[in-house]
Length: 489
Image (cartoon, rainbow, N blue to C red; front, side):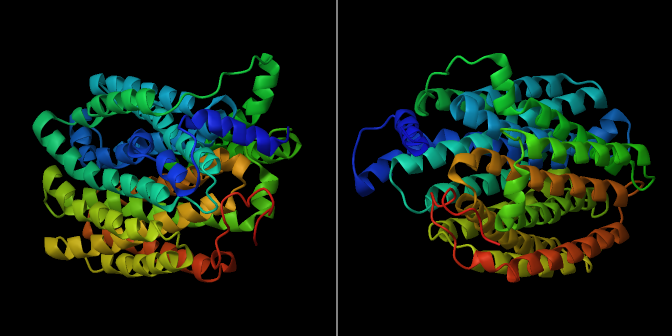
């Protein structure tokens, strides 16, 4: 039996739906019961990325630290996610995506309990790490499930509405995060920003157990073989590299050069190891040979850097400089996620890539330049209008990059590819937290917001160039072509 036959057999077993043909099978393959827990599981990470935004200032007051110090709570989740996302993708491919998804949801519940009961910044940081690791299981595991389901259903093109549903679900959770966080913080204190995960995760856990078919039984393998297939050494080197890099970034503007040196050495060791590994954690050859996929990773990182710089930076500015309450600041950001979802849905159904990415990049340039005009007296309506521009950017680029990822990644590596996509995105998010922490290190001011705007203008110009000059975006490949075509340059 060939590897493709084995893959199809496995996906048939995992699909767990009645046999059919053509469109009927495709409709039944992605029923609302099947996709609902997938959307919830994949949304836990973006929800926790945005939910804490309106709680940072209250946490700083409660813990007696500066607002800039609370950036560690943002960076901790992103560091954990940057390491855990591709790890979860690797585990999903080897151990079964449903198992990985369930384990991640359970870890989210544990992290929520630790954070809700935390008494100092150390406990809150540990909680954010646990939540980051747990929520990281969602997206790569879900992408593996969707890809296998699509192969089973005989779909020649990406399931646009399902992928669009992932984007919409993520956009909505990012949107409702700040306003819900603001309401919860105002009513129940900042601890509710952690504890709210418990009911949401429990529901996701139960729905996944009921409606997502079981993985195939695990084969008994020696421990050494399991470690080799997962590439434990590669994961450890990657985690060490990211940790040392984060320590360096958090030390800015007074750089700690030793952590940077350690990060460089570990990165070199990682590359050398992965080039020789039989089943590499990060396929370096794939990144070099499939330059179209690598550019998609870079666009994802830079657009998320811009988005989360606005999400966290603008929220802190609205509360500390503009004088809005946590609840008011959250409500101001609500249209951003709503418009992103409205923009993403119709585009995703048509599997568009290049056009939406160009429109998103242009919107990012305009929105970033608008921040240079903000002052503490800027009307709320003007702030909302600019956030709508960022919403257009988020909706367009999220759908475009996600569809590009689905079509550019080899079918048998979609889990690790999806995890790496989120890793690059989290690198951008870590950079955004670092930039925001540096700019607002001592005080949140209009001039600091203008500096953030200047940085984002530069980032947006790079994103626009990466999009306009990327010829591989003209014609997305069909699903399943990843194995037969090594990648486009």
